[in-house]
Structure formats: structure tokens, C-alpha cells
Image (cartoon, rainbow, N blue to C red; front, top):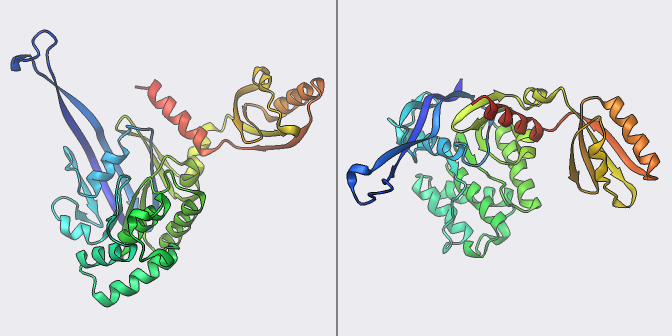
Length: 328
């Protein structure tokens, strides 16, 4: 069964531009339509972790805001578990948990009070609220800080608390907008582990992220949106095949040397700096390794570690975006 069905969904914003010579005259006003989301269609299967990726301004947040009842679509329709998301908003919100990118906890409340308050709003009984809050705070490593006011929480703690709040109603589907953005390593790790855990239990998760590692680790399928249009939708493995004409070499040198002149070798397509080494995009592994080896020998440079692999999801993402721009 499809958890989400989106058909021909669009969101247009009208902006009024005043005439240059007669700014105060209403007749010189012109309306410009911005298509934030432009006629997109996709489905999300029940029990799936679905990634929604795109550069800044691509339409990710606008889409998720329409799906969660914050913004009304200009055209198109959205169904959540077969129910029209705009004609039956109360029924849809009862099965939905949502953590927007710019969401805030109630800073004057403690962590515990935030969960009690949200649970009461959702109609969860007091006994169940207490049990649910205890379980969630322990899972998200917040139980020891449950009586601390949220304004004293770190960003990572706030993000974990927001997830706890979204889970108080036992949602069937969870919308997460950039859940690990700007977080410390520990908080990001906790959130990723718990996303996997809840998904294993059957929860459908719709995830927007800039973090390609998160998308690659967690998502069953990924849609890539740019300029309001979906330009690719597939599994992470198949998306990476977009760059199958490329391969990659990671080179680490003794003493942390990073010889940038390697980028000028004939077989090298691109060189990116990584910690203590270089990530090198090539077309032919054999020719490139031979050329690199000759170069480092002639310059008396010692290789500490060399590994080859297929390109990362990030490289495929950038290639798809670049291809989409060229086709516009």
C-alpha cells in the first residue's frame, strides 16, 4: 500500500513588481509568478524511508509543508494512506508526526513538560503520556535532563526533544526536514539509529536532507528535486550508477602531503581535498594508478594508503543536478 500519493502537485507564489518610472502608480504594477513546486508526481510505499534531496531553493521545504498541511497547494492533490490531506486534515494529522527544519520546542517548559503538553494536545491519556515520555526520553538519551528547561538544551538536545514530541502520538508516518542539520556527531548518530529502529518497526519516514551520507545510509529510495521539478527518483545504488563512467581513488600520503599538481595529470578528471589526502575522480583506474605512481616516484612522495571505489552519492547528485540544468 502507498503511504503517500502525490499527483501533479504545484505551488506558485505571486510577487508584485512595481514599474521603474512610476513606482507609485498601480497600473504599472506587474505580477511575477514564482513556481516553487512545479507539477510533481511521486509515491511513497508504506514502511519506506523516502529521501527528498535538492539544492537550496529547489522546493523541498515547500513540498513537505504542503504534505503536512501548512501550505495549501496551487494545484494537485496529496493522499496520506488513501485520505486526502487537505479535505480531511484532522484525520491525516492523527497519523502523522512532523519535525520541520525551523521548529522550536517550548523553551520555558522542561523536556518532560514539553512531552506532557504535546501528548495532551493529541489526546493521549495521562497514564500513556507518562509511559511514552519516559520511554522516549530514555531512547533519545534525554532522561537525565528531563526536568531541565528546554532553553538550556543544546541544539542537538533540542532536535532530539522535537523528535520525541513528534513521536508522542505513535504516528504511522514521520516527516523529517533536515533532522541532522548542524548537529554534533553524537546527536546525529542517535537520530540516525532511531530513524532506522522506528522504520524497522514499520513506520514510514519522509526525509529531506542536505547530508548525502545520511541519505545513502538510511533511504530506500531518493527523489532529487531542482527548480521545483523532480529530475530523478530511484534507489541510492541506481542513482550512483549515473556516474558509472567515473571511478574514484582515495590517496593518503605520509606527513599529510597533498600534491595538488596531481590534478594536472592526463588521466585525472577531478581532485577534491579530504582529511589527510585526496579524493580523485578518474575514468580508468589502471591508467590513473600507473600515472599517479610514476608521478609520486619522480617527486619522492610516499603513499600511506590507496583505495579505489565507485563514486559517492554526492557525486551522482551533483552530476544529476548539472545535467538537469543543462537540459532546461
